[in-house]
Image 1 (cartoon, each protein chain N blue to C red):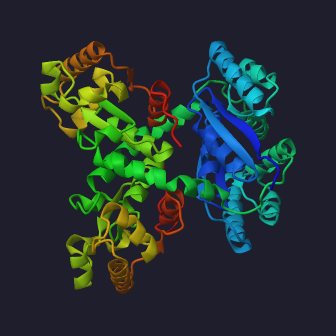
Image 2 (cartoon, rainbow over the protein chains, first blue to last red):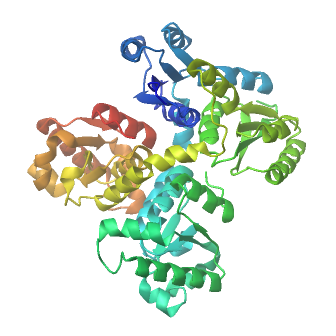
Length: 273
Length: 273
């Protein structure tokens, strides 16, 4: 392409954290590959002054790019929404249309209050914090109180257990422990000590040897631990062990943490929050 | 209210993880307080067989509730979307309308491929994993390599530092360390040893004494640690210390992890991913 790439500023504007607007917005923008998006978060825009400041930033971006900005908004106040709708930018009002549709379907009026996302979060707050603390206390093979784990992830070192456990705890309030399969376990070819009692809650993670080699090499370059031969050997034994023990597992190589966590929940019939 | 509460099944249906659909959906539903929603996640619905299974579950829920189900969908395939649109349920097609609007604005066609949310995640995957590992390695006062922290959260035990650091790492790829202010630090009334070198990156968290007392009492009931007097005393000293040292802080009492993390980013000018 000889044409200069189109540049667009994208603003996520919310009277709350803006995390909903950003999550949806990023998914939408991923469908357009030929545009250079520059994104800006504007959380807690809940009064006219803050909206005014935001409008100045939007005007500057539009001037800089020589094109309309894109505003992805979750704003409850009609007054504030109108201010942005008059900015000349393209406004995607995420709540507006859907709330009307739902109100008609449910035959009830929506509550018009800012930061309602917070309330949802508050209800489940306690469960999530408990799960995070549990997961923090059951990382890397700590096995006391394992009977209250909802899932126990196993796999060789650096295959993705820690981020996945944390995501399960943080997003879904699931008490996820994780247990590394170390070379000694693999040579014995049995589940390490206490894990045998919780077979039904164990899920395995595996990974491509080349990728594991690269990840481990960053931590300990030129070590036997990181060598491609050792990675291949450990992964081969781990998969063999899981097969023998009848444990379900998945390959994490090309998956995001979100995808791995969602798959674990689906396979293990975990409901989460 | 003598009238029985309206019951509705809500299905989050996606060809990916469904996390975008669920995030938006939960925010929308929070606006309707008089309805008992029962929600079901249906991720990875990417072929006709899986859509067929989903339709059976939807039909069963509609029969059970005696009312239409609500489907909140992020599906790329028109064929699958049509299957759900013919189910008799109320369909909120999250991508559909917005993608059209954006395509017109950008004068470019959207890529029609499933799981594009994944790609976004994959680009930032490495940064997030690095941040999670960093945060894991710098919880609860571990201070080696603190110069590469983007933010250092301080506060008394159980005021919300660990969940906030993890959320910053997981959601925004920010390298967040945390450091507890223990009674010895508070009595000396100076920032503990190494922290003094990183004053510009420190942010404080505080909490209501009553709430701290309840949280600590769950961990160690009837201890001096959990007593309301001790909670008041520690919090008073911690706020005094932060005031003296010119450190910004916030009260976490009524906030969700998302709100605390977003506020920290805003106050510390952190961009995240």
